[in-house]
Image (cartoon, rainbow, N blue to C red; front, side):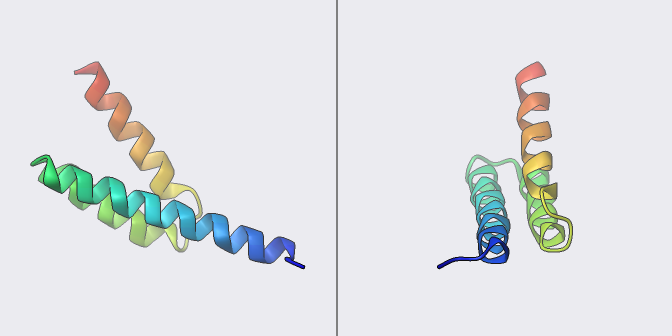
Amino acid sequence: MTTTRDRTDLLKNASVVSTLVDAAVAFANGRKRSGLLLLGAAAASTRVPGLGTAVSVVLRVVRRLR
């Protein structure tokens, strides 16, 4: 049986992994600054849950508005 803490850790890890994938896609598309920002957010997201996801969403909104 999984506990609430196990589920929280799983969601936190999923957030970090998805931010790292977004960073890899940004680098592949030639967006170096976005990639670096996402890498930093993924690293900080291990301490501040949700930071990587928030940065990813903000970058997508900014790109859409340009």
